[in-house]
Image 1 (cartoon, rainbow, N blue to C red):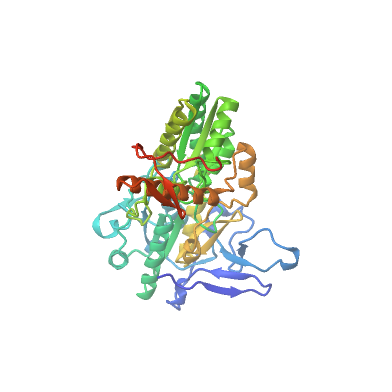
Image 2: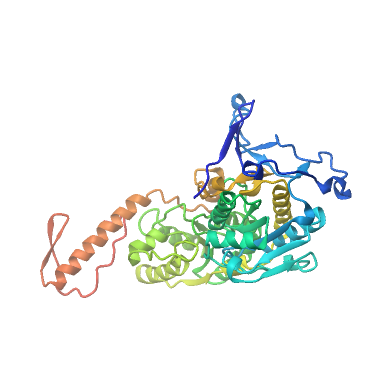
Length: 506
C-alpha cells in the first residue's frame, strides 16, 4: 500500500512533494563527512554540495503572476553530510521486468560510483529479479567485474516478471544485512520498491531503497524521459528505412513496422518524426477505423494512387478495441507483471489490408511486415543514453548515502530530482494528442485525424448486428429478419455472410 506523500509549502508559495528520510523513523542517526569533499575530481566544482532547500519546479512554463507557486521536488545531488559510513555499507542491485537499452550501464555506474566515490566495497547483484532475493545466490560486484558490461545489451543480473513477495524480500534484506537497495525497473517494479521501503520502515530498518525508472515506452509520469528511449527511437529508424526501401521498390508496395508502445505511442511518434519516410502513424492514444470516409483504407488507397508506395508505423497497443470489434472479445489474460496480453495489430492490419484490396479494388498489395520490437530493446544503449544512465546512477547513489529512501530518481525540466515513488506510479504518461508534437506529426504525414471514429464504430456495430440477425434467420429457415423494427426479405440462396458495407456508402 502506497504511503502518503509528505507535502510542505515554502515561504514563496512553492509546494514541495518530499521523499522520506531515514531520520523520520530512526531519530538521532549520526552523520558523517562526505568523502567527496576531499575528492580531487570535484574540487573544481563551483557549487560543491546541493543545499537541502534546493528544489526543482514541476512546470517550467508558468504565469508571471504565479511564479514561485506549483509543485516542486527535492533536487538530487551530493550532500555535505551523509548517514552511512562507507566502510560499513552493504549495497545490492536488482533489475526487474522487460529489457531496455542501458540497464547494464546503470548497473556499472552504480557499482563504480559506490566504489570510487564513496569507498564502498561490499556490493552485491541480485540474480533474476525480485524472486532472486530469496531463490538465487547473489553475485559479488566490483569495477573489474562490470568494466565492460555497458557494451552489451540485456541485463548482466538477469531479470524476471512477477515474483514479488514483500515480506520474503525484506526478510532476505534483513538477514543479509543490506542497507542500500537499488532497484531498476518500470511501473510495476517501482510499486514493488515502494512496498519494500514501507516494510523496511515498518520494521525500523536503516535501509535506503532507491528506484531507477526503466521503461522503453517512456510512459512513466513526471520525469522528462526514461533511459533507453533515445536508443529505441534511433534503432527504429533502421526498420523504418528497410520498410521504405522495400515499399518503394515495387508497385503498390506497403511497409508496415510495428514498434513497442503498449499504452503510450512515444516511440512510434518520435520515430515517425525522425524518419520523414512514414505516411501513417498509429498509436494507442488515437483510435482509428478502417472503412468509410476519413478511414484508414480510404487513406491507404489514396496514398498508393498518389505515390505508388507507403510506410505505416504502428505501436503494439494501437487498434486493440478495433480488433475486438472484428475478431471477438479481447483475451483478458495478463503476463506475470500484470500487463494485458495484446493481439498482434501489425499482422492483423496486414492481413486485413491485403484481403480488402484484393476483394474491393481487385489490386494485390506487395506488403512487407517488419517487427523489430525485441531487436530494439536488446541492443546496447547509444552515447546519449549512456551519459543519461550515468547521471541517474550517480543521483541515486548520492540520495541513498544522504539518507533519502523510497524515492525514484529522474530529470524534471533537465534537473535531476528525488521524486516520491507514489507520485511517479500514480498515473502513466500518454501522448498528448492535443499537443504541438502530435500536430507536427500530423503535418509531416498528412494522415487523417480519424475524427469520425465514434460514429464509424457505431455504424460498424449496427451493420454487424444486422448481419448476425440475417444469418440467424437464414439458419432457422425464415424468409425475413427484423432489422431496426422492419421486416427485411432475405435471399434464401445466400450461403456466405453479407460483406460489411463501407460506412458512408449508400
